[in-house]
Image (cartoon, rainbow, N blue to C red):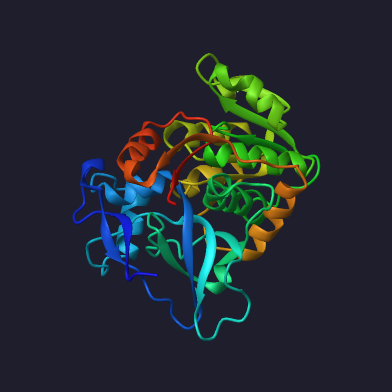
Length: 322
């Protein structure tokens, strides 16, 4: 193996045009890390939000968490690939094993590259039923959905769960997880996504372009909101007394939560290999599957960022590396 690799990096903040496909040094794993040969990297909204200096929401939060990180920066947190080398203290993995994970978040990870180092305890065995491209689409959105539903909201059998932007990256996984846990699942999306979401397991559908969800729905126990703005504010109106509103963008207003006697939660996703193992089992049992919106080669990362930044897409965009 040589000491250099192809990677996508940016040398300054800016729009997608700052992304450069170039040569970079292959990183060396620390004692508790592994080196992964990357086969595919998932593309998430936070990837472009962190790169874009005009994003003052989650992007600013992640930039603040990495304020001492030097340029150039390699974006990306989601990865699927194989273990290439082991740190001296790692005994839990063997070279050649296929793995997937969301690395280090919110600390920079750099998965848009041919090789990336990963903490050995943040990766899990790749679902055997998925290709690397499909597996790379799973970690961040699935961990976000899982932590929102079960850590923040403690969803259980029979709960009425409303998932906004249900056809999106987090949404389409949240719908499937809630359905598998015997919740009554309601999804909001455009009309063109109704049949797709019915297939994923929703029980009720709201076309947000034609209906106001707060006017047509019976009360729900849990709301999962990756949208924010008016959607977040209006979601208080549909919750039952003691219900839970989980936001993925900003802290729900405490005075609103008090007014409606509900619990407002913000989920900022964290790496969790144990959850990835549970998610892998659901995938390999055929109960859950990721949807790939588009697959692009690594050198077209700028186009991938454009697609994701537009929003309103079904499922995930993935970069293939090798």
